[in-house]
Image (cartoon, rainbow, N blue to C red; front, side, top):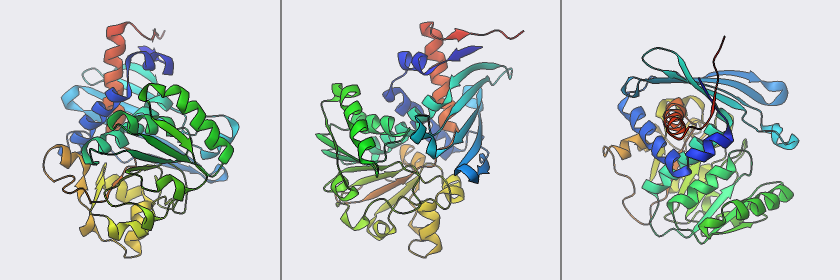
Amino acid sequence: MLLLSKEDIRKVFTIQDAIAADKLAFRMVAENTCEIPLRTNIQAPKYEGCFLAMPAYAESIDAASIKVINIFPHNIDHGLPSAPAQVFLMDGTTGMVDAILDGTYVTQLRTGAASGAAFDVLARTDCRIGALIGTGGQAATQLEAMLAVRQLEEVRVYDRDQARTEAFAGRMREELAAYSTRIVAVSSSDAAIENADLIITVTPSRTPVFDGNKVKAGATVSCVGSYQPFMQELDPALLPRTAKIFFDAREAVLAEAGDILIPLAEGIITEADFSGDFGDVLLGRVPGRESEEEIIVFETVGVAAQDLCAAKAIYEKALAAGVGTTWVSG
């Protein structure tokens, strides 16, 4: 069995690799070729957290996985990951555990890559301005995924904690310098989304984090943080202006995402407004962007197929490169 740390994974796996793995996962979801039970969710209300277990199995790649991930948003205030996790990758032919991976980093990669995949396919090709709302544990890969698929001149970052926003933007300027994109901290969500072509929200907010009336025509918006029915980052005011709404997985979104469940309950949208799963676009079943003026929303809650495809690809690359620590149980 191979143990793969964040440092091991970074040696062999890029955000571009993660985007490719996510596209495979989303096609599997649309084709129904991956067994993905809805994740087990045990609430920890005392700390506004939860314990999650996410299994997946795909016969086509002879692999299964289980991710154990625990969401504790206040960890960020103590210098801890907000989503500590491990991924167990299993051989689909024997049931043996092939690898245990740093699930926190795998989650960051595959979650960022979801936005990257959506922008790669759905966003205008002439995007120049990006906006990132939220600077928690998932934010860095969200930002890199945005830069990986579009040549942006500037990305504006906003978080309610201005000191944390400044620190994050400074760190990203150093870590992502190769992209030659200006990364600036701003003091309001209005400043972040003004004239933005790409918008990512990645917060645990229970109230909308931007003004939907101020989103420009032609923008593509990826909503990442609303993974429970009471969470709502997306301003419902944007939805009547939205031409298309895509999901990573309809069943999962309609079970979990307050961004969609709340406006559904309020009658702002109906299920007739849903355009389909993103995998349907990748398979050519439904159209993606059809005009430069369309506003497109991508809602992602994360599905276990992403963890499976990413873990399988990482494991194969690590084996080929001789990376990782081999552990033999007694």
